[in-house]
Length: 206
Image (cartoon, rainbow, N blue to C red):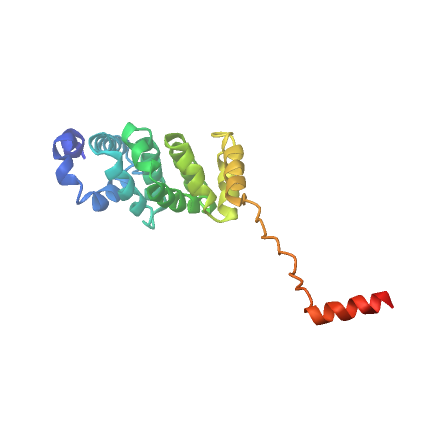
């Protein structure tokens, strides 16, 4: 742990490949019963977050959310929330595909049975919203209504403007230009042949 904390800024390129295996182990140490282990693990995780760009760290953290350990997942969400505050995270999350992936993965955890995990998911979503509001709202609007409702409730105090933003996004998505139907031209009445016209005139005179 001490080696990672001390040398993360030097070993960052070499740590990118094994990061997906390394991060769960470090996050698990954050819940260690020994204070000294928790402090060193926190220092190691903070060093990795400072050494690695957000566009490298966030995809790894999303995959860590598949870990069966709830504490590891909660730790990954906390690290993700902190990474979203970095300047390079704005560019990464402003890309629609990246934001949709993040919001979809984290939003599903708002319905988890573990209160700590739900709280961490709300914090991570709030950080994503702060990094790229327009992309976040668009991504959230693409999710099922049940997830949207959970997000509205979870972020009601942290991002009170989200409710209005999401409503506006939905109205724009539902808006349709009125369909202009082509008017049917009146039927063309052909003139009767000359012989029929003469017969009609004679009948009128009689």
